[in-house]
Image (cartoon, rainbow, N blue to C red; front, side, top):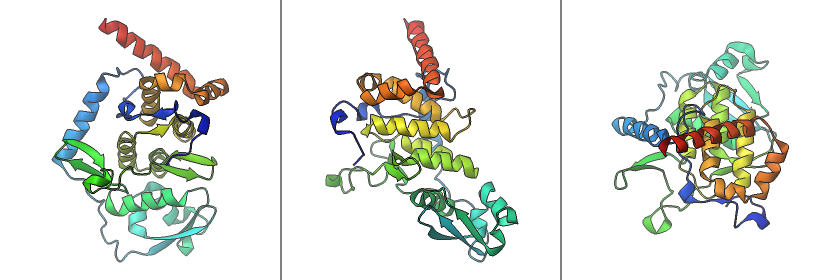
Length: 273
């Protein structure tokens, strides 16, 4: 299901008991606070259903053609729907070279990711949709139920990204795309969905974390903190990972942030003693 390095298969899997939770608001927040943040989010979602964005006169607005990715896949969308994003509102006002022809070129985007963004703009969610399981009193991804219970089993969580030449966590790429398009609600949705994923290889997690750091501002305190908390909680697995060793040798801002987060975590542990 996931791309992996054969000689790390046994030791580099991120097991379900280390499932990623909701990100903390800042790197200095206690990891004990994460459960409370997640429960608060769940309570708010139980009280209201996810609503589709207001479409207004979308069925009669102009159709915009979007040319996406290196393969130049064609998408079509109503202008009113696209303009829910400040990025596309600017494009439709003529700030793109071909906006007058109602055509927008997005050569650096991945078609699968853009399809999910477009689905969100029309429906307020993207596949696999977030669904509340009343029986378990928990949120889950649709079709993630075991096949014996009528579901499709595990839902694919990665996407091949041509820009990096490998697999990345789909929700991370969507989060970063939502950052660029000015869609904060989509960012929150993608982060929540990623927290429900499990069984991901260490190499994929680290590659996705680097991607998140490269495509979010330094002020981001959600997705970056999500990865730092995930690595700390799964430190036993990452400690045995050859991929982790290579990443540490390459260095980067992510690993300084990881050092700070681990120090804060140790302070929390000492404070509880």
